Length: 144
Image: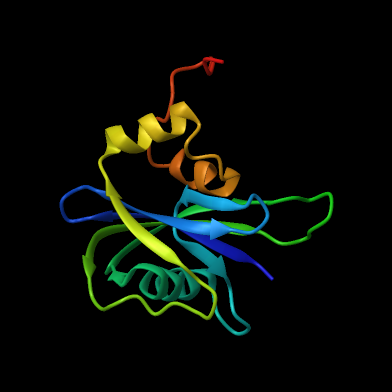
């Protein structure tokens, strides 16, 4: 199935980010909200649903940012990127069983710093964020 992720910006121009435990890497990652498109849903409906479930935030202003192929070597799906602007807290999180998600509100500079330092490593999150923010100077060279 297709996936969605969102760059959600609140009314104070802070990016709504999440920290979520990921079993594959064995730690909590800093990333954008996202999830799967359910049967019968379009990607915008899925994006609004996932944002609300994972963060409690909602938006009335959505823009489509395009899609990427997450891993065309083994998957035939797309990840659709959406921008949600003027987000507001609408309800408490509605997390699924086994989900542990902490919300972090970050300024644009904090998002850029987290991307540049490698704190944000989730490729799909970086792909979506790069369509909204200039994340790092080019050519990108990370200090080792």
